[in-house]
Length: 277
Ligand SMILES: [Zn+2]
Image 1 (cartoon, rainbow, N blue to C red):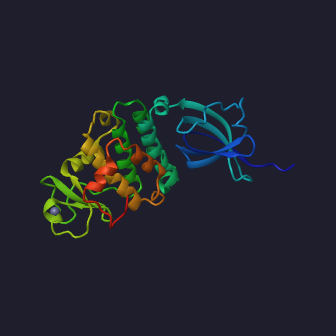
Image 2: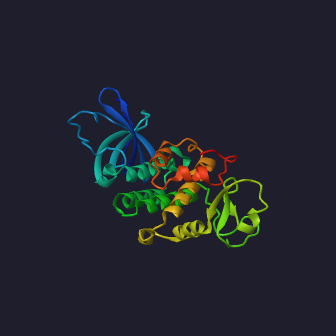
Image 3: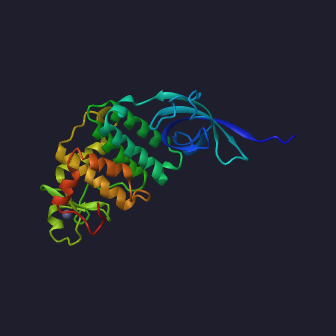
């Protein structure tokens, strides 16, 4: 008899994506705490009386047991239990758009591929915030800002790229290629385009970067600052993060456009030469 080597593994996961497989099964893409992004085969998951029930719905927070056979490409899902279903997301299009954008960041970038328990904890914490908080956008901002750090593209927010001074005055000129900004003085000589944002937005991002899960829920930004933060992220992700040039979730968020982002970008000095929105 040939003995097939098999490992039984258990971990926590967020459901990122699902595709149908065969007549009754699903292939799930999960972001797991201990193994990074992982595809598993859930046999019979599309049957009405499937043992998985609604546990495998998108963006659910679950625990899984799966088998990894040496001879098989795709691990087999054996058991899945719901930790948290994020029910408010399903009833609120704006919350869902914010959560979908986070999930897409993990699903489409290299940072989601490798195991990173800190990034997993950040994702779960921010999904809980988006689901429950009266100010869901701040959790989207908090996640994206820290995600950029994990991805190696931490924006340079403390000082002007040219003179090294802390920003004075009212506006700075953000340079996406350089990952930072020119202050008001230095940007008068700058011919490189860029996106003009307020110094208040830079200070808000700095405060958010120093925040933690206990304090982040207390943040609340004006519509103007939130719009500028979203614009900065939109450009930054598209410019720097491979796999995010065409993001359906960010486009979806733009279409919902709670903060009139698109209109504002069209009316302000934009960085069309650097990247188009
Ligand atoms: Zn300067």
